[in-house]
Image (cartoon, rainbow over the protein chains, first blue to last red):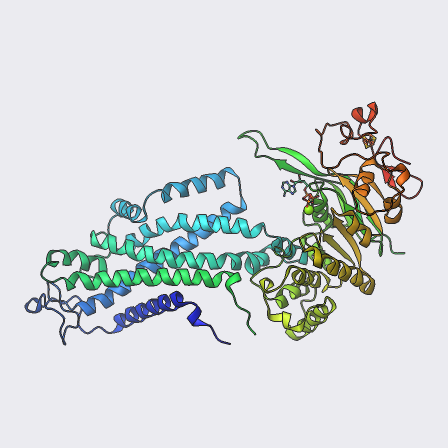
Length: 277
Length: 324
Ligand SMILES: Nc1ncnc2c1ncn2[C@@H]1O[C@H](COP(=O)(O)OP(=O)(O)OP(=O)(O)O)[C@@H](O)[C@H]1O
Ligand code: SF4
Ligand SMILES: [Mg+2]
């Protein structure tokens, strides 16, 4: 029996959006209908047409091309910042868990709480103000607010898994500590971490857009959704599609990854697993 | 004879209570406080005691899952905690454990096949998938689970069936000793007897020796050949099951036996030394822990800790004023 996709509509829709986005971004690396950065002032501020499907911006650049390349930039920043946060946070959290109750554990977790007390996007904005604008620094800044999220999750997950009798049972069976960590502890944490990573990804996309909107993230002329929104603000009354398309791209992406995260959460919960007969 | 299977020598295990201050270490209380016992091959030992008396701690010490703070645990004459880590892992196939809670002791992410085969991957690393599966199927049949269980996950089974999976896992390496820590107390009363009968049956057919832990005297009476009664980390009475249940000499054991429904103890000395259970008094060092609730208590009971001493009929008791 195959996967009963109709039981997981959110997962399917979210997964489809995420896949489509990745396909568009991948295509954007090799082909775009127009050069996304070339100025063509005579063609500026055109509405959607057969030639420019989604119109052109105030410098005559093709919106489809800019959205495609912008997707790649958003995904790159999201992926790298979440991956950094995931790896560093999981390491920190499991390390704290292995020293549960010590002063080090306490210090790590209180620092986490401090960082988590600030809204994610605000943390990123403050960070970039400190270390300077640019895509690489945006990745770092977004990673910084991801670290405590994963550290806290990994710590509680590792503590919870370690206290279960199946870890003791594995030890009684003669498994080494390394094998126990790989065969039992990490797999029982992985689901939670992947779900969280998907949701953090949506937040990272939003943060990247926010930073770029403020001119702190991806730097012009490289296209980014956030910057496109910023540039569109003067033309809200006359050429609203300039804001609508990048805005919709951001909203759809955030929605897609949130749906995917929620769907995965249902799926990784072993109680939700069905018998395979 | 080859000598005893398992010997515990003056085992002590202390745990911190509370967290202690910034500069003061947490206070430590002994969960197991100087316990000795011997398990001969084929003579199952039952351990009874109320909640918190240190039974599970003793089980983990017996399985070398924890190190004692003092004392030794010898399996077939070898001090398990003196072995190297890899030697200890190699010995583990000979002593296995069944845990109390079959919902917690089986990894929910693994199929029954992988759960049951896991100890075999350590004990018989040379086995290929086919050989492993054959062994798994054989042991599943022995514990009364269908072949179809192989590819299922723990959550698809009832508590009783899960405990069967746990038993299969414990037996797949053909151990000589099985430590069972309250193996039925987490199960519905209706399936407790089934699982107990399975354990009894396997003991017969596979020549197993159990270290069988329970807070339920009736269950222990059923399974064990010898019995040890624990109270606050210490042994208060031990001896052959038949004698100990028919004629307990320690007032505490007596109270446990009297608490059993329809147990035919001699009604003549029924009221002789019983007291109500479940009333923990203040534990004073240098006194019998039961001194303030024992009807037989004398001045000496409040001034001195009774030590375990041998009686004539192959039993031991820690009491200044034993019954009978
Ligand atoms: N890992 C631990 N850390 C701290 N204290 C512990 C730990 N394990 C057990 N204890 C304490 O040691 C004492 C004995 O516990 P143990 O679990 O061995 O008792 P038990 O006889 O198995 O009880 P139960 O019938 O409830 O299972 C208890 O007071 C318990 O709180
Ligand atoms: S030593 Fe004294 S107080 Fe303790 S059980 Fe025996 S008679 Fe009772
Ligand atoms: Mg216990």
